[in-house]
Image 1 (spheres, rainbow, N blue to C red):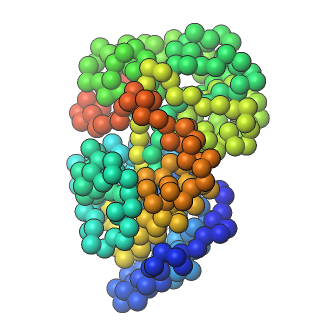
Image 2 (cartoon, rainbow, N blue to C red):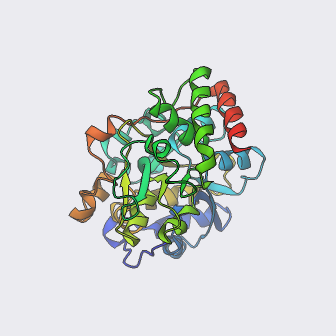
Length: 350
């Protein structure tokens, strides 16, 4: 990942070093364990945090919300003080009693967020989470190999023979089933088993042509020219297209998922002082801007957005216009009905 070569906190009016005395007196661990998405790991940021606080940061990574939740529920998450779940997963984790409430009086810079992130539907008043990144899901395609660009999810079915073994879908039940449901005219969050079955049957028809269900490894393959198209998150698409401008990203016209990845504190956290210090670092405008610029993510931090170069502010893959966002839909927890999705997903994969 790109490093924060010019990261500076001097103009923030507050330094992470200020937490050191509180941290030392709390007699907590001198290590901060973070569980995050693969693409959110930035070594230089970890080093900066260590320099300012004296805490060593260890970041473990995952490639799906379900993998993260399974590890926590199996008892393997007791070392983590910070986790990065997506919006709908925040709701699930709250329902399962896994998250600590966030004490806003210990935060510096919460008012830097865009208004729409102050009271999100998935976590009213940011009671349990702080937004880190937001975006959409779509299709990244090689414009040299596919001169007629895809406009909707149905493109994969319409060009199945031409694309045989040259495209990937995310390894994520809610994203893949949701996109298919949306293409069929249904909701990403359908509670109708007949609709879910239709999506499964549609995917069964496509499966022989799918190269893989893959969340990360597709990136090197599409750069090498081995793939023509990949279902992916907008943040990954922007990063990869920087390496090869012939790779273009499209948000399907029938609609896509609109997601927010967040920062939460698990109840089992062993280093609460470190957790708040980490969140306060991320909330600083200078840091938020650098994260957006270096990691190609859509910052929810208004003050950070204002510090971005105009070319990034105007990048519609990172910051889509309202006309596109209006067609997108947030994933919401499905409760007991999730078992239906999982059953069809398991059948599809096997």
